[in-house]
Length: 239
Image (cartoon, rainbow, N blue to C red; front, side, top):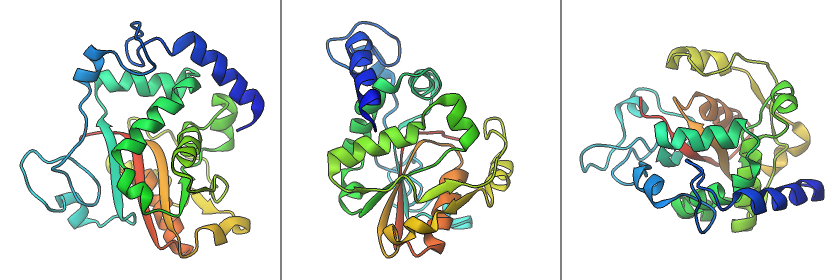
């Protein structure tokens, strides 16, 4: 992150950090107001030991989806359920230039997945295409990953994974279509593949919907000798 970016974020924090990340109500500190906090569906146990999907009943097991098609990633952890209340926060951060939110959101991820983070060797963000980055001007997963690096002091490698094929937007596609859409869309930059070989990789993204994107990334990382791949996302869509 360059100094110009840091300076812009500093002034945005001055202007916006006193507003709730969801509803824009005034708050004492950056984050959520009490009302929005109470309406966020925070994910906790019980949940699937692999994909992190929450269970209704107190069980310690693997969900039917992971049993039917075991993911390439070893474990996924999400902070909260993607619902109407949390959606506004995600969309603001992802599409409305609210980059000042990355510190608060990454801190939530860190507190939720501190065990998984402590067992990791290198942090890798899910990449976006050149066209999407040009339009959005930033990759929200990189912002989160960079802050997690600062909080954890774990190695950070934003260049190892790259988007090598332009894909349709995942929004609105079925699970099957999402999986098909991302096949072969990610690759490894060979200049940096040694940074993940025999390493425990922490893969960072904003939203886990069907898991198609992070699973395809994990597949590529494993093919290039990553020892384990654990995924952390802010939100989890409950299908």
